[in-house]
Amino acid sequence: MPMWFAYTLIALLVLTSVLLTLLILLHRGKGGGMSSMFGGGVTSSLAGSSVAEKNLDRYTVLVGIVWFACIVGLGLWMRVAVPST
Image 1 (tube, rainbow, N blue to C red):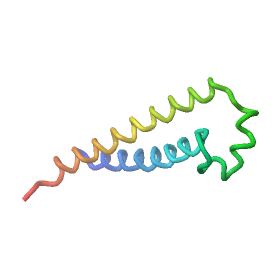
Image 2 (cartoon, rainbow, N blue to C red):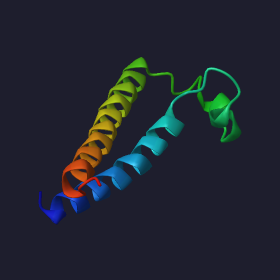
Image 3 (tube, helix red, strand yellow):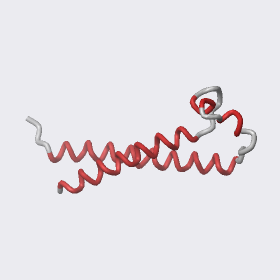
């Protein structure tokens, strides 16, 4: 496999890792976790849109699937590119 494939997967992995972290932090907390530290408890009654929360869930799952596919792709590429001894 070409080397540009691995670099593309690594770049996509870094991008999805950062995006996944941000998307997870945007979720509304069930208790007094990280979201209440940034004022999430005050704004939760004002911005209680269930459509926005469902879309956030969908985006998080989609980015998580892409992140997982990058991990598997890099593992398979390493198995093919680096011969075992």
